[in-house]
Image (cartoon, rainbow, N blue to C red; front, side, top):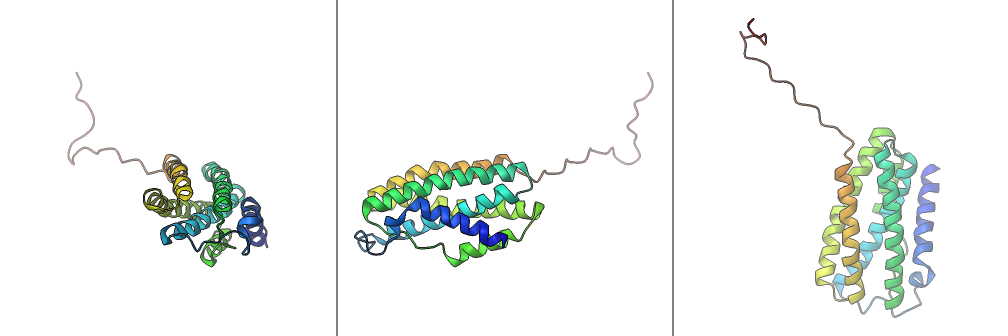
Length: 196
């Protein structure tokens, strides 16, 4: 039940941010005029933001460490803004965004919902890292090779946000590395200093 509520609220938020005009099949010229690189980017950018928004929201409630809660909150802020911008680009260009996140993203959210404590924190951070690394490549490709000027601009503007999320993951590592053991003197010697 907790999964249904959290996922439903994240998806409702995503839908409300995107707005009805970008979702309606009958409105606008559609995506037929988009080059394949732009169509693929539009879909992947939407999928990235909706999944990140859902798991970020989950982390703010379910995360064990303060770091995970902070990362989750920042992701919610970042992806809420990203979806608003993407919606404006879609509306301006008469494009349709996907109607719902792919089943794979929903499965990821469902899997994370079942985890608790450190297990949740580790899985959440790993998922954010993997998703952001993939998005970094996708957004770089669009910013350099996209054919739709508005999507290229959107991709370029979002790249620093994605890099910022990755940096936040690096600076707040939750797993502390063990300290190296102190060097031991060779066998047959002692640490004691001879008397003076």
